[in-house]
Image (cartoon, rainbow, N blue to C red; front, side, top):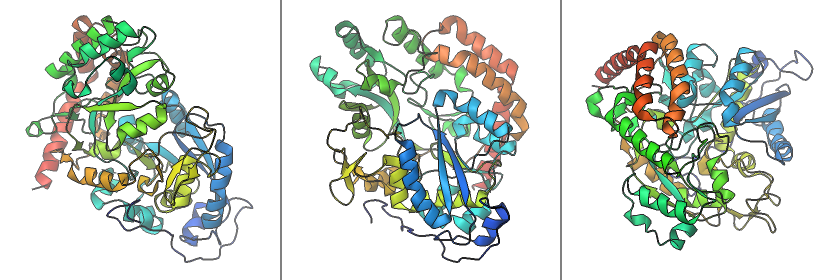
Length: 506
């Protein structure tokens, strides 16, 4: 069905070969069991197994009901049940680190180049996936282009796969339309960060109980993942300004552009446009908009961002795009799925992941919940809220349809463009490409420096970028500490690897 998955052939079933197995332990299958079983389409021949799936998200009231419905599908197809494990973003790194180092069972886990993906791979905490993809990942390989699969490779090995979603991004700001209209603010006149001064001032003067600007995600600053003008080349320090810079790597925190951004953010903070405790607040900016407590937040954007944000918040939102759309390695690797070494059955984990890329019913269950309770169908592929249900009282809504596998399998909501997935596919194909697209940074030689630098980033970055710290006095200290921690060594190593990569592309 092209409307769900434009330009790509849909894979609706797994391999059908079934090999009978003897059970090693009642109620539990070993890795060898699954590997010998092959990719069974109905679960016969596979020992029962529970798959623990960890990802960003907050607990949902009806999650166990949805989980039970998912298990009807997974038990029939791969003789496995699923245990969903949402973890709040603010607790993600600490909790997953404890689970991984404590050898707690996780079978599928969200990973990201923004959250130490390369470090996890370098530490041997993730399974290589290439053989598993060949054996059990046919749907994944059909859904993603080879270049999209290759983007996550480290030293030629695949340790994660990206969901099918917006694989490019432009950046800008999402604002409440009702307040724009009420104060006669024409969003078409906003072309730069400076143009937002008057907008925020109008909200501040007229709506004392509404914060003009909040961070999209809790515990972060407004620009974090919401306003980016460079290729981060795998995160940390060392970036490619304007996605080119003749392939010269620089420490973004030492650039004039960063200093200028901090000056703007400090001015907004001093004028009361942002939360005074924004750097430590656990409030989700989108939830604050939903509750009528905030006006705007910066975000990465894509086709349909306004409609998606409006549906989530229950308030009509307007997007102003402030950058061009680019594809980088990080826009692909910023959101991925991995199989940790802690999994007791990596093959079965890959089978489940494959279903999320190829089984429309399972994908939409995990994403939207149960038909009739969390949504109703208006047509074969269009859904809406049931009578008496809206975003405010919905019992199941992680709000992250782009995370759970193949978003091109998703139903569309009545307020959305029914052709959104064909437009998203076109967006992915026509976005400008970073000059370093395809480059992946191997952190092995600078793991010690990266750990030290990350400590400095934790100490200073959110405070500076939320406006709470005066950049005139704190930016020089920040840079000095970065250098003492080894930032120059990281930039040098990244430049060396980028130069070698560039030679290989000729």
